[in-house]
Length: 112
Figure (cartoon, helix red, strand yellow):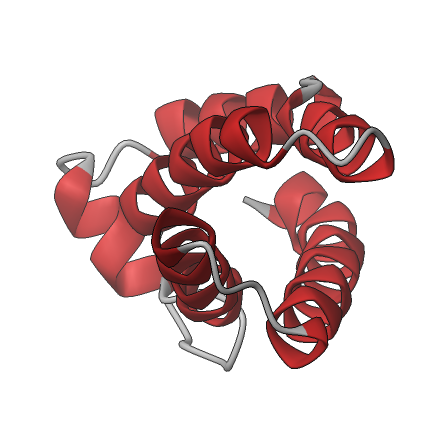
């Protein structure tokens, strides 16, 4: 399984004992879930405590699925939210990473 800047498929499969069906199911749960939109809503409402909670959830999902680009971006975002020092750069990096990761997952998931 190839690794690219978005996902470490080998790492994800190792974490799941090689179960491609489970990986596909978990990716689909992420794609169909509402955690990303809940974080966007929290930012729209300037509710940074809730944004911190949702970013932490996305960080866990991204880490467990070996979504490397998203994990790095959301980790930075979550850390800045915890410190109360959110930068526009961290927010922009997160939005770019989540958009690109979702696009990539929509392409590769059917092939798993």
